[in-house]
Image: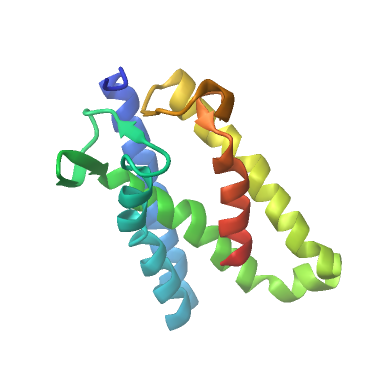
Length: 166
């Protein structure tokens, strides 16, 4: 069953993803750091991982058919916006954390990693619950006991782990 997203909401989401992705590219180019360019490119390419992870294997996600597809494999689509989303949601924060690591280490010491984890965990529901529950951009097919606001609760700690470990 496809999520019933409004086409205007989908296009606005796609434009926001594109604008933030372009902002990340501009920031990386201005840094003139080839490692940053590699990290940002790699985080964009997480789209392949996202497709595998969200197919009928683990998270079981179905995106609205109103998204512009990056690709479709065996009937399972992966929206282009998700590649852009991964880049700015995971790639850019990681680059900013690395860029400001000395300041963060001086300020928070070893507790900085815990704060990054907790911040990443806190931010995800603010973004994903409205996308799923209000805008119906995608749907998780999990048992209701494993969801918070329509989002698998494991996404919350997974976001923290992915951000901290990168």
